[in-house]
Amino acid sequence: SEQHSFAAVDLGASSGRVVVGRIGGDKLTLDVAHRFANEPLPLGGGLNWNMPALYAEILRGLGQVADGREITSVGVDSWAIDYGLLDENGGMLGLPHHHRDPRTDAVAPAVTKRLGFAELYSVNGLQYLPFTTLFQLAAASSAAPQTLSAARRLLLIPDLVCYWLTGEVGAEATNASTTGLLDATAHTWSPRLAAEVGIDPGILPPLRWPGQRIGAVLPDFAGQTGAAAGTAVTAVASHDTASAVIGVPATRPDFGYISCGTWSLAGLELAAPVLTPAARSANFTNELGLDGTTRFLRNIMGLWLLQETLRTWGLDADALPDLLAAAAEAEAFTALVDASDQRFLEPGDMPARIAAYCRETGQPVPESRGALVRCVLESLALAHRTTLRRAAELSGRDLGIVHLVGGGAHNTLLCQLTADALGLPVVAGPTEATAIGNVLVQARAAGLVRDRAQMRALVAATQPTRRYEPRGNEAAWRAAADRIGAGHPG
Ligand code: ADP
Ligand code: LRH
Image 1 (cartoon, rainbow, N blue to C red):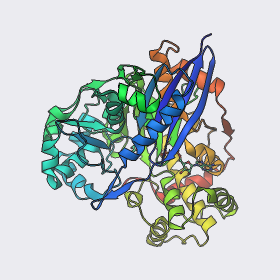
Image 2 (image 1 turned 135 degrees about the vertical axis):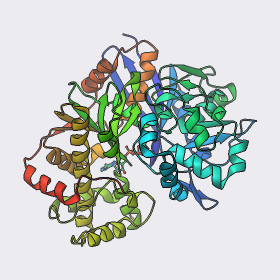
Image 3 (image 1 turned 180 degrees about the horizontal axis):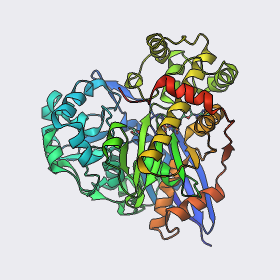
Image 4 (image 1 turned 90 degrees about the vertical axis):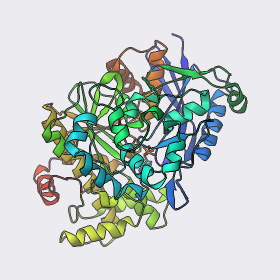
């Protein structure tokens, strides 16, 4: 049958890529056309995203993709929560802030106290994360009220990129669900919460849904990229985690997923949100997935711990294989940290923070680099266990298999430790599940695939994965879990 090509722009917190996915019949192939680093830019004392630089890389990537290939449409996804503001002429009011910017440190607890966590949770269903859009806006409305009152539109990162490509504004719903301003049950903006944090609800654009046509690539950009003018831009599940969950190659219903990159997002796909007091006090989030599903999950610090450790040591990713080999040789369970602890959120000296954590909790401080990396990976595996088991309990669902997707699927030690910790098989891969989920939603809009089950079957049949069996040391992992407690956030 005929093949169609789709371009996926996928911006992760540490790197971005422009990917071409080809779909036809029972085939799905993926080709990473352009990969680029995503380096935050400290500007004016804060931590910002360098959106102009990222946009230039996106244009470069789209240019390569368009070169000699017919693209049916383009879709854009990125990390969630962060946003840009447009003025009345459509100009961007400063660079978007990074969610690791400390500007929300004091504001988030104060706003939570004022509005009440139970009340907030009953509306937006979100776990407490100090950097949720609603808290960032509260911080902005006290620190930079003029900027906020000059704003005519608030656009999340993928929506901002789509605006630059097409001139059309909108708020894609899966990503809008991470702002704290979306009603988790009604799937509409909450003007009341917007007003509570000091913004004009009118700056929130109309919602749009995965699969909807956004518009056509503007002629001047078509000129720059070599893309055919008029190429369609399609709304995908623009929250990268939502796209990653679509790209999970699950073939049975009792699966849990871990989208493991800079963050580790561990949870379940459910038919409806779980807004119970138990889910709230376990700090589980209810984000919106494809077709109105709920992504019931928690944020775990993820490979950020390892990235910042390498940066502190002055090493780059080339050093990973040797470090992981040393970690595999290091003694097991000497020190463990709570990989959800907010003290690890901001950029900084991760080995020093881990050492401080160990001292505070009466554990030995990892002495070698191998021991420290072991501590990080065991702590992540433990958080994967605690989170997924809790998700199953809170939702009354069975958990029989775990899919780990994203860059973390390259980390064989982490995958094995995760299987051991959970006592369940872990299927690792695809590493580019997010780009695949992006492509699949475009393919559905073009009529090439039907539903989530068919999308996942296609991924399972076409993409390489690796299966890890648990090595059966439940007693040791239970003891480790007892040492760290339930892994509650700070
Ligand atoms: P994000 O989407 O958040 O930018 P990715 O899904 O691209 O993140 O994952 C990036 C992470 O994947 C890196 O921080 C690194 O820890 C891990 N990773 C990537 N390639 C490898 C590899 N070859 N071996 C081990 N880990 C890897
Ligand atoms: C992962 C992710 C995650 C959000 C965070 C800001 O890239 O989108 O789901 O919590 O970034």
